[in-house]
Length: 590
Image 1 (tube, rainbow, N blue to C red):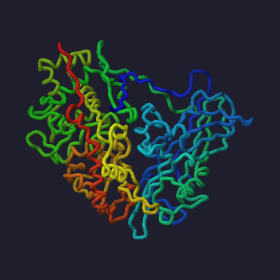
Image 2 (image 1 turned 90 degrees about the horizontal axis):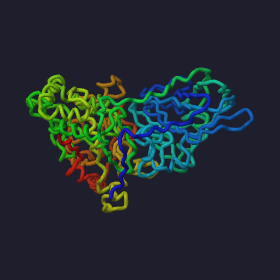
Image 3 (image 1 turned 90 degrees about the vertical axis):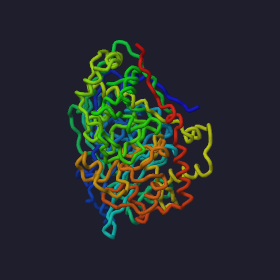
Image 4 (image 1 turned 180 degrees about the vertical axis):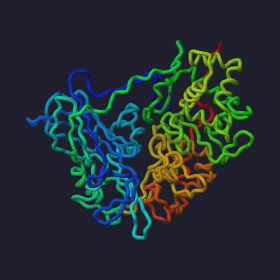
């Protein structure tokens, strides 16, 4: 039986470092720089000692082992304080509350978690914890352990083209201590600014060259890239300034869920014990009455202008909530421009649609209703139609404490139902838990899936895990995966950033054998076609994901047996229970 982790939503306790008492607050901001100047992401402007021009597209890392040194040489340690910092996410600040009042002369910390935390089960950390794998995206999933630092980007080749690099600094023996002298007066609150200089990390005292030393590392012993990073890391952090100022971070006030009825039944959320804890919406705690209403609304054709379509029309439950058509069809037979994404394990996502334009599930659920090509209806007309239906006022009263129907409540109810669509009981899951086994071909496919393509070190895997690793088989990010673009530029239309050209959301590969066609525009009909895309030459562009850009221009050239093994493995991700009996809510009888 698949291991389950259950809890009542809305009951999650937030773990806050520090205890009540007297002390000062220290706020440390660590800003990525290059030779002292702010680091610009996705900018092919920097040069290393080897004369190679390169960019940085990803800088993400974990810190731990923080301590402050008193003038007498004794240390104040913060053993359970971990920090995840990320340039793209603009996570640059660490805060320490209740620091013993006093004067300090230096600070130290480590790049990478301590050995105990590195070996810990990542599914046990709260949703907002730095070591939650769904938050930081730095856990090595089935292999175990965290990537301490991920540095990725592109560099210009001698042929005026570009290639990619992916440096993943990890493994317990490589955890690196950084010590910095700094006069800290913590008789009052204090703010400290550090630089993390990428020029030093790549150049001094051990210069690294992408062409000479390699374009990828997973920090195995003897790797020249690892030696360079180990030598350069301690000096890459520098103190810029110390300020006697009130730290800028404030604690968020508790959210009060809107429209919570006087009587309600908490919903029992069920997931795999191998999944990271999700960040469920605290202002919309799961209750059975709302989940049941959301399920009813999901199949309600009154949401469309002509009463012919519901959410289920493009997300059929018996097809893993997918649309088998290449393009979804709206009212009056209008043809859309994208394939509908399957709906599963949405509790772990924070941006929705292929281009990420919806910041929440409740917002996403309302957009197709108002889209002229899809349901072509207004929220005003929808609420009026539902209010006139005999059962809906009573169901809204049970779910929200009032019979009033509104667009906001429709979004909240649909969000709740969609959050319950969890899939985790596949053949692969049962084999992973020792309750079954994979065939030799399926096991070979899994090994290819999880193996780096790195000829320099003798590895010739399929390199799928960079975007599809972890228990969710997706990284919740956006990537340019080398497909040729037609009239859809992807995420750039949402952000306006040239660096997002051709990027689309990474879909989860759970139930992938059931969710054809594939890609945002459904261009591939079979898994074999998808694998051929990655095995053959792909479209080169400045925004191509670095983990693909580092591959040969001619492609991976996987053998026929390797391709067959990959397909066999992907089919083990089918969750028959989810397809045959998806999670459901029952409307209360009145």
